[in-house]
Length: 223
Image (cartoon, rainbow, N blue to C red; front, side, top):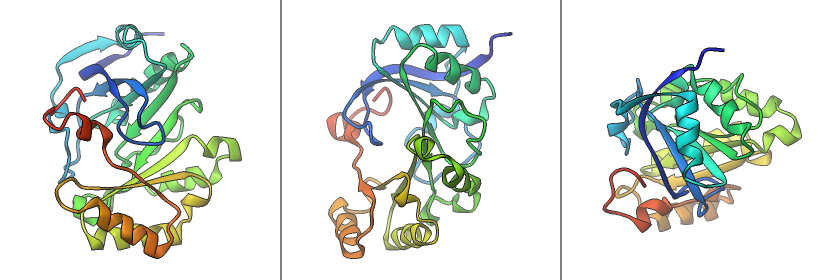
């Protein structure tokens, strides 16, 4: 099998700042490139390719960071076909492999060992019309054990975003079988306000703050 050549923005070690794995040391592989324009994107630099590496080189670099958890993120990692080979090769090392995706592309066909963190973009993102609703269907159709490998994430900037998220969860009760995460767009909505809304409506979601930004607010990359 020919090795895929991947466009890489950066590979680094940090503390996992989001998801149900928040707080754990984690190696991050940030793939370059994204064809979408989310208004609050905090990794615009990842549109640019810093290196082109083979799958073997990426795996070697990630393993050298000596973490039990490895996350593939972006950009939008699923825009590179070679990411599938990379995910499988990383899973074969025995590490826990996370994929964080913007939620525009179906996660069908991904190695079932991969833990998938899927964004659901609310209206303020400017991209809510491009959410891949097939991913919700895939989560519901997955067996009980495989449903544990799906997480859905909503990042809200205002009351309208929150109501959109709440109504979506009432229509598609993902929280009954999968972890659903909800956070705020930094500087646009007070975390305490989101917490109040969640409590008022009794939503079964896990509120999260971006731990890496609390630890290193001055860093714009590599965190």
